[in-house]
Image 1 (cartoon, helix red, strand yellow):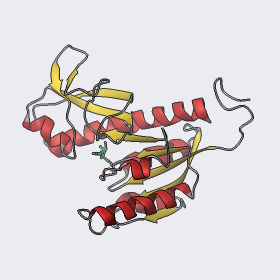
Image 2 (image 1 turned 45 degrees about the horizontal axis):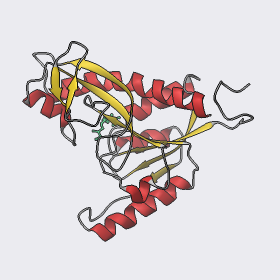
Image 3 (image 1 turned 90 degrees about the horizontal axis):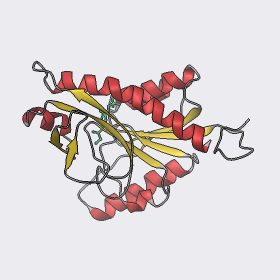
Image 4 (image 1 turned 30 degrees about the horizontal axis):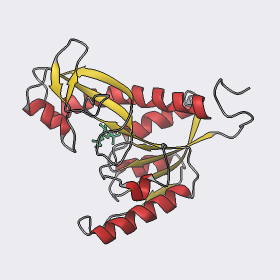
Length: 221
Ligand code: GAR
């Protein structure tokens, strides 16, 4: 039987592609949830832009199709455009219903995003607001800056924020923006360094990404 709101008659699994650049602990959380029957989805592709991304090894170990699509000259717009096209072609070949950027450290433009309208989501290790603004109000009413970019865990420490967290949002051409699907707060502790804080954020991200993928699979699968 189909879940309420799902496509009537659809029997094939909800297909998920994961794009990553690093260790892939979030991919591992998704793989474990899938193995335990908690995801309601099937990971059909893991693609990465770095040969040393441990996440690619995790995918291979699980027998999942794995693609390495390197970006050799990131500052050359023509090379970058061609790379996005190749990455989109590889991804499209696996007909994903959802593409999860799980620690994918490249910005994707509309060259990629227009191929998968409303199907790309991103994990961001900081709190982002609903309105695309520059500040976020925590559950305790504390106003903190909305941190964007590649170094937001270090930024939270540098700015002495009492709390940070993580956000999962739909990806639009605006960087670290787009409709928020889930977020959670994580307190910054006095003894935190970047590694310790990021590990605690990741532990929360693991739970959140499973929840979001399972929810989207239920609604659209
Ligand atoms: C996660 O914390 C994710 O939010 C972050 O990279 C980490 C990947 O961890 N993503 C970004 O910073 C994207 N700009 P993992 O490789 O262990 O899953």
